[in-house]
Image (cartoon, rainbow, N blue to C red; front, side, top):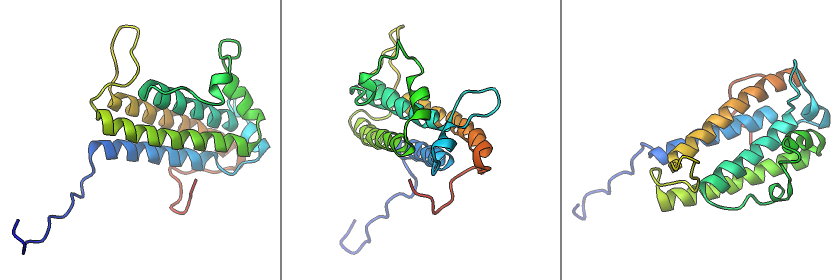
Length: 185
């Protein structure tokens, strides 16, 4: 480039890592919208034959953020409150307590877990790339890639957003495929 040539414009095409993180973030945002703004009764409501509640679902997804992205992807500890729970004695702890805890605590726990995951995912991608190994080794000796773990997390949110969709409609009739543009979480 000579001194008279304009600098080339940055590429408008996102990288694969940016695309995966964007899809995960869109799923988080839709999940947040589907589960937001409810009181104790809304977070405890069930529908059909399921005992699943939105409060339990929010707390479960917070645990999944810690399990899949902090522990299995980044190799970190679970952190609070997960490291103090005996899941062998109470395997449904997050589901049960998510329906019992005050809404502000449930929402804050999930928001902290998602923020921690955002930071860890960015660090892991920067250090290992999408083709790099996660910190998990399956019993058969295989180690999933960073990409595999992000895709699993996207799938987890997609599945649970579907659950939230059904539960939320039963609580107050909220329906829709995505959060409105002005929604923040």
